[in-house]
Image 1 (cartoon, rainbow, N blue to C red):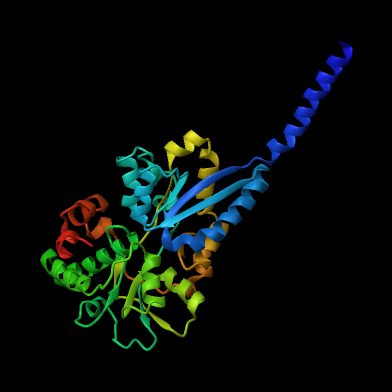
Image 2 (tube, rainbow, N blue to C red; image 1 turned 180 degrees about the horizontal axis):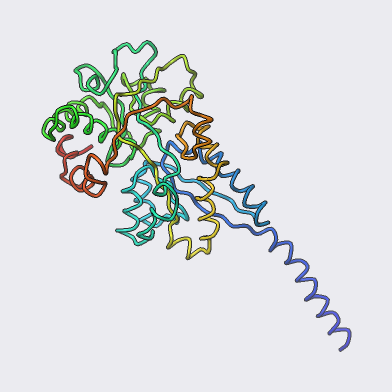
Length: 337
């Protein structure tokens, strides 16, 4: 009996000794669901945050990524993709998670600095070397014989910013929505194919050789230059465009369910830290931190912008008027594409 008891105690002790290393090896994993042209950014952000989290807490974390057209990604989360955080490129895609799925808290924009937007970016025109069509501003995109490559505004925030920039340009130039609608109708009639997201549009233009001009975010031009060389394209900054301020949020319902709220929150806060802002600037996004912005000022020409809230009545109004079923965009494209 004494032998059996000792054997049992030894067995229990061995179990705990064996289990301890397994527990120490266990680590947290969170999923960042993001828009498609941010994938290279987060490939660098993620290991930097993982190292900082390990240093501060002693615990390991792995960040997984999912990328696609911003609005398509929001639909995926609404359909059950368990994102701990979302890093989208437009406000409506996060608001949809608030209003349609109660996945994100209503106060998400007040939880982080700058309306929960860690950087801004500008819309640019990428043309082929020598600019054979002489494209200089928005008017040139509506001319006969010019092929414009832009992703679908229904599925891509990139495409939606292009649409709104063109609308705002015409609205300020001509002073009425009728003229703006006519102008944007002509511009979108020049789009030969609507890709689902910004990266697909870049592939169509840069690798498949379709189109005279790609309208995209300036960071995508930086990525294409790195991949394909600076001797193939030129960057044109239009006279005005809408301010693009990509927002981020914790998906509260998922983070609470999975017990990842602390690390998910810290992950988004890292984006606003000097270290995070440095990585953001290196990838061609305009950082919020004044010191980092000053360091990289030479990379970012001054641009004239307007805001959705200031000129177009806010995102809710834009969504309802332009992008709801049967809205102006559907009218312009004869039922949408």
